[in-house]
Image (cartoon, rainbow, N blue to C red; front, top):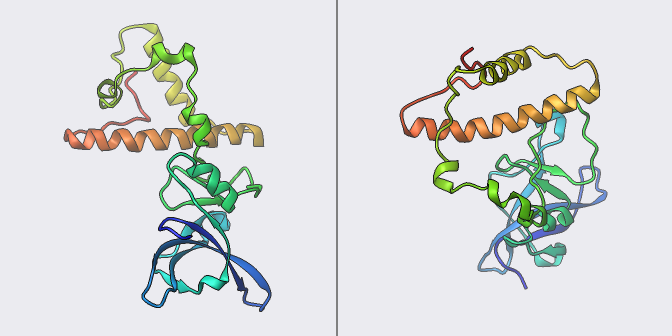
Length: 204
């Protein structure tokens, strides 16, 4: 019935002795047939909106399990949502599904559903490049024409942009998250070559 990696809803009681559900991932079964699990716990990060797996594993009786979820590579995101959480691009950072997060809180970007990520528009195939090309370290364009100058200036202007309302703040938060994600990835590629790059201040 059980396999390593299963997600579990576990019956329990809160600090006030009221019935509640605990969330966990199965990592093994010990010699007494107890389930070895890591509990998914609410943290204090970002005002409590981030959940992470505990550092230490615990054991629980099989009788306490209320529901079992079986995530696979093909249905990972959708099953996690059924489990009650949304994985994010940041390792061991989850957001509770169905919770409205205030716009001023900059949470990690939620992972897209595997259904969306697997779909490919035929019109976009011509824009896909080989991995070797796509994974080359980023370089700033040489300032040799007006388009490059205007693009680089736009980056400098963005650095000083202060949103004037919640709508603009949401847009800025989204852009900042995306930029941080891909800058970290490229920074790793730069590091391999013994280089670094100032992404926020391109040459004018």
